[in-house]
Amino acid sequence: MLAASYIREGKLVAFPTETVYGLGANALDPDAVVKIFEMKERPAFDPLIIHIADIDDLKPLINSNDERIYKLAKKFWPGPLTMVLPKSNLVPDIVTSGLPTVGIRMPSNNIALELIWAAQRPIAAPSANKFGRVSPTTAQHVKKQLPNVDYILDGGPTTVGIESTIIQLTKNGFNILRNGVIVREDIEQVLPYFPGDNKDADVIAPGMVKSHYSPSKPLYIIGETNKVIEKSKAGLLSYSLQQVAGYKEVIQVSTNQNLKEYAVNLFAALHQLEDSDVDYIVAEPVPESGIGTAIMDRLRKAAYRFTY
Ligand code: AMP
Ligand code: MG
Image 1 (cartoon, rainbow, N blue to C red):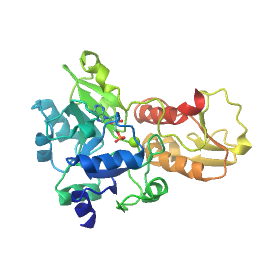
Image 2 (cartoon, rainbow, N blue to C red):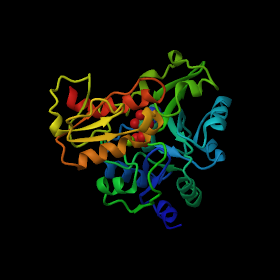
Image 3 (cartoon, rainbow, N blue to C red):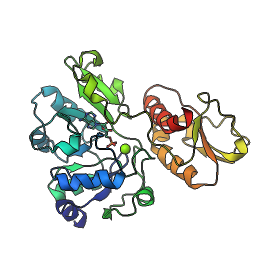
Image 4 (cartoon, protein in one colour):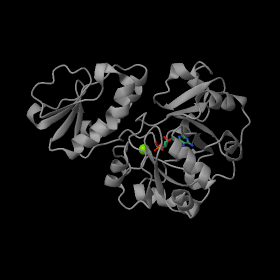
């Protein structure tokens, strides 16, 4: 596999995961990892997630034998759950932005798994977009933002559509650092939600910036903005298909108000509207429970720089 030899040679490969497309490099090679930060224009304080293809790949990367890790892995891997764990010395500091912890997950996309297997290396990969911008869910989205990437594996549109849920283990349970389609209630089937007893609470902040996923055009959330909307100039991300009249463009992000499907389609809809001739984007809020929490989190971060 050519892409795998590229990884071994220290080059960058964009590849599909079930969440979004990743920009991957050999996680154990600091010179390769630095290229990710350069290409994305990502600040060095924002740590990367390492992707593995086999549970046996986990042990060398972490400095912990907490049984809860393997319980969670058994239930949710391969899949969109990232665990932030104490790192071993094998993991270069550049990957973790100098933190003593590392984010790790096993993706469920077959092309991603094959790439990691064939490369025989863990792969550090953030989303394959410029820092702070809309995440890619197709190979075309990657090409638009990162035309100089060494190789793009095209696996078609991703099937989850938003980034992984990130958790950290606490003394008595777990804490959620980023919401995703694996929701708190899912994880509670394995461990109690117990965010309060995390002594590392201060160091988990990096990367959890207020502005993110931001389209090149202003985005406003209905009910969360003072902007007077001129519908004839705006593109609407519709959830309910109510009050769609008058907009220049309307995208029904999901049929039948299905939040899972909304998550799958959200970033593609943002890409479509940023490439269309509307002046700005308006989003109808979705119910804020279950996957809706992760969706509203993405929408608010995307709207942040136009709101404040
Ligand atoms: P992404 O850009 O989707 O690959 O996600 C990377 C995000 O994972 C970062 O912005 C952090 O919020 C989070 N993350 C990765 N590693 C760590 C870590 N060691 N500690 C806390 N958060 C982390
Ligand atoms: Mg990202």
